[in-house]
Image (cartoon, rainbow, N blue to C red):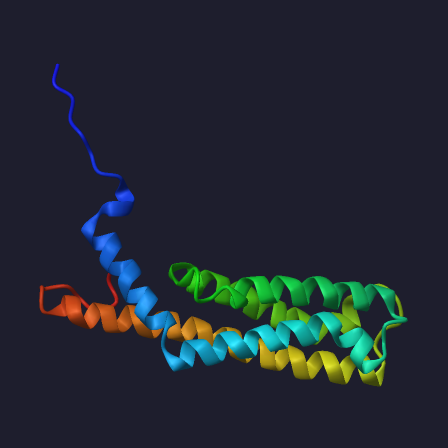
Length: 158
């Protein structure tokens, strides 16, 4: 019985090219700006109860701290794991939307002018940055499909 040696899937030429393309996209100024702004937005979200002065609202303070850290982890690692950007960006967008509605839905009477204003602004910014990251992932896929079009592939079909 002859044994066959298979190269690990990570060494497949298509995967190597896909990773190289994602690495090039992660190095673009746009991707770097989105990542930097996302880190700042997540950092502000985490610290906002103490910056804006609603840290006495413990439930919202803890919610913002957890969401800010999660947001930074999702989009802050953009350059290191660009192949997962699309799904991470949608999760980050959900955090942005949650941030906008959190003052009205977390336990306790936390919907005050400071908390509402802070959460709405950072929530909208966080959502827009996440959508920009998702758009960047989609644009890369579209550009990749254009290259495949010359080989008979249909755009948008993977």
